[in-house]
Amino acid sequence: MRFYLRANRRSRVTVGITAVIVAMLSLATIALATQQILSAGPLTRVLVTDQLNCAVSHTGDSSGEFYGDTACGTFVTVGGVLFGPSSVPAGGGASPRTAWTQVSQSAVTGSGTALDPYRIVTVADAGTTGIRVTETDSYTVGQEAYRTDVALSNSGGAGQNVIVYRAADCYLQNSDSGYGRVDAATHAVACTTGTTPTSRIEQWFPLTPGSHYYQAGYYEVWARIGSQLPFPDTCRCSELIDNGAGLSWSLSVPAGGGATVSHFTTFSPLGIAPLSTTKTADAATASPGSGDGYTITVSNPNGTAATLNSITDTLPAGFTYVTGSSSGTTTANPAVSSQTLTWSGPFTVPASGNVTLHFGVTVSTVAGVYQNNAGGDAGNVPVAPSGPTAQITVGTGGAPPPTTTQASAFLVANSTSCGQVTLTATGVTAALLHQFVVTSSAGGTPYVVNATADSSQRITATIDLRSAFGGSGGGTFSAFVRMASNQVTVSNTVTFSAAACVVATPTPTPRAASPTPAATPVVTSKPTPTPAPIAQLPSTATGDDSGLPLLALAAISIAIAAFGWRKRDSRT
Image (cartoon, rainbow, N blue to C red; front, top):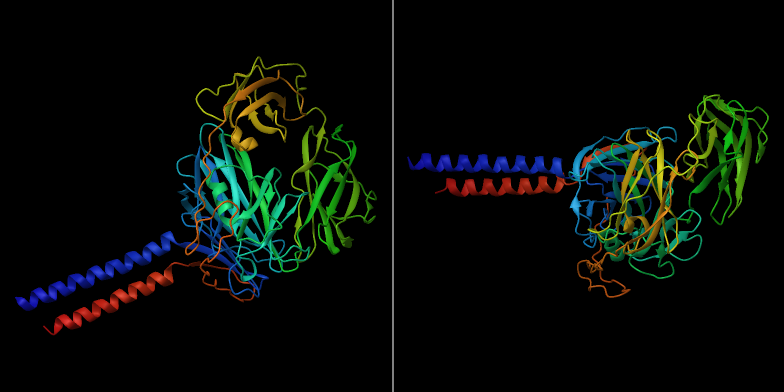
């Protein structure tokens, strides 16, 4: 009987330990899943966690490009709640923060070419708010930058105002300290190793208009996110500090609709930033089937000339190129493939200069509003596309929009919440897209919210004035409604006041072994992060579970201890 009890006890312990090991390995797979693109580089590793952290390794560096490898990520404010990665190294300032609800993460797809880049698609929910984030990170082998597209969808029954942040604590070239740089023309912001144009950069280059930038102490960047305010468009560029940087966008996501923001993250040892593309139409309106034209401009912000291998343009449906109409940097006709036009170079874009290309088109015979997208290829240097732009309205696009005041009034409600206003317009045209346009008496860019009138000829929107204009959300504002198709004002203009919100300034969270930062401090004695694994592989892509090895070792240790206990017990 005594032998049976001992044997039974050993059996139960063995079974229990086995269950613990299985549970630990299962938790590693569920909670610490990541996917990473491994290639010949120069970005040898682009990693994304299912909590929307990011990590990057650059050839030649022994450490990752962000502090602690993953002090980088996507954050979104919704309804006064900040959502973000569950863990950010030394990122306690971005609080209070609610972790993303994991939905899915794809395996790495694509072949790493310009036409078929490697891609990772990660989906996460902002709790039960109805806001879902679908993030696509893509990389073309040979380039110094990778692209991130953050698409938000709203399954809720009302529109929601959000702020999207893409930010990081920089650890550029194995160093935790650096300077900053801002391109005023594009709002691109960077951490740099020096103050010269050729200093190495870690840059966020916006592809979606309306962004705001910030470069400051890492704790200041996290604290700004924690305060749920847009980035302030400032840079401590000339100071050598333990820095971070990033971009923010203030958006209104309509019920049942969505919005997307995109950017490049560039890592250049020579400080080479992406080229940018803009496009304009000769005339904003045209009769069906008539002629019009476009001008494409590719700009080079760098101190050295760049070479364009090609310039591309995607024509709207129904538009056609006019043979022999090219002028500017080339007079050659483009290669035409469906709606895509490609002019083959090389075209030299001078340092701090640009090249232009003009061409004619025949517009569609179908009335409507059409936009266009242009871009190019410059080899290892990314070229930012223009995005949907150069709008041309063909014909009337349906019934002519009203040109007289339609809305009977705006109803403004701000009695219960600081920094908020609810705008309602009645008597607008049903089923057509309208826009609320709000302007602050303090100046700045007007804030625009799209709204489609329902069958009762009514539109409404609640606007967070802090997200829209920054600051406390208080002040005097004016608003009106216009048609989205032709920008014609269709309402009276109202003026209203909003109460300011009192926002406590977050106390920066110091890193381990660092003093608590004071005003404009220099944070020192940060722990040196463990170098990130840098794979030097021929153009391959894999996914992994970065938490699995440590938990596996722990499980093995438990098993060894259990075996020792069993041996000791067998001697008694």
